[in-house]
Length: 476
Image 1 (cartoon, rainbow, N blue to C red):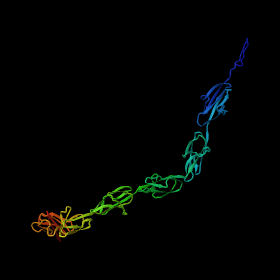
Image 2 (image 1 turned 180 degrees about the horizontal axis):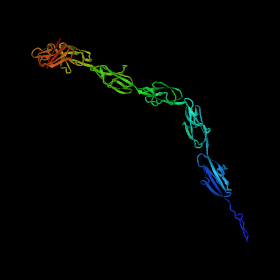
Image 3 (image 1 turned 180 degrees about the vertical axis):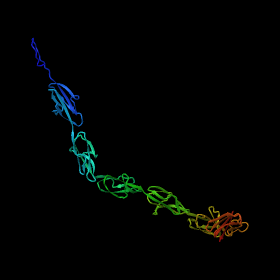
Image 4 (image 1 turned 90 degrees about the vertical axis):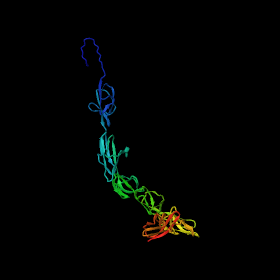
């Protein structure tokens, strides 16, 4: 106890003792942490002790504002704060959130449709929106409007949502340029190609089909039909994609022939189709080649492969076949008129005896074993059943050709549709027209043979061994 009162009763020695004062120091933080101690701390310090108090914000976007005492009075705005203990002390560090200025502006041809100028706390979410205020214009981008980064692109989105972390100035931009895409399509091209045009520009495009194809129509990217005009003119009112539709060409293929036929069939065929034409000649004709509608020679191949490239007219050309007529003679004369003849051409061959010889008859056929005629001059038209080999027979004057027919004189005549044969039994009988066409051939077994023949002159040949008989008869 001081003061201390006592009663003296004897000698006394008293000594006063002093100890340094000790004080309580309490440190705390609002929206922060005391970093010079662990958490909110209460410390006992001797009088006069120098203490360093330091605090940091424990939330993003907060900043230190000062130290206050127990009454709330500001003690210091310094951090860290060093002070001397001279009594019990309570200090509190204060942190407050940052607040930022956000300014939104619009370039020409547009306007800001959200709040344009305001104060926001750190981390606040701001929605910036803008719209064009002139026909044909559209939003393109947000750029930084602050001097230190002016023009930097911030976002392509509209509206654009962002968190505030600093003073912000952004500007909306607008444009009226539109992309016109004219993608190259298979089987053709589009002129002039992709381009960029301002609103309401008039654009003229033209489709050019590849060889073998033709333009059909214009469509948009969804396939909707726009126009069948080519060239096609349209007005740009937005981003545009236009496609040209092409289709393959179909061409008529006509195949024809004269004096023959074409086995392949004509018709309608797509461009570049591969076909083959094959021709077959009529009797007595042979294939010569193919010509087009203009008469130009194309090929002598048969079959003829070709590729359809356009309207096609193919004509197979046939020419008459040449036939060899041979005419020779036995000793005692000569035969004239042999050689190559066209089908259906007139033929004349003649037997000319040498001096001292007489003409007897013609033998004909591939083996020259058919008695044909006893007329020295033969005139006929070359046909499908005409003999092509002939031989003229001659004998010396006064001599007989071969054996004498036994039993008397041979004779033949035609009456009432019956061919009467005298002394010709066992002979092979052949009847020809005067132009060489064989009408009958049989072996005579009796004297009468039914023969209904049209009116005309006929040549009868009878052959047996070396015996020969030739005569003419008339049917009226």
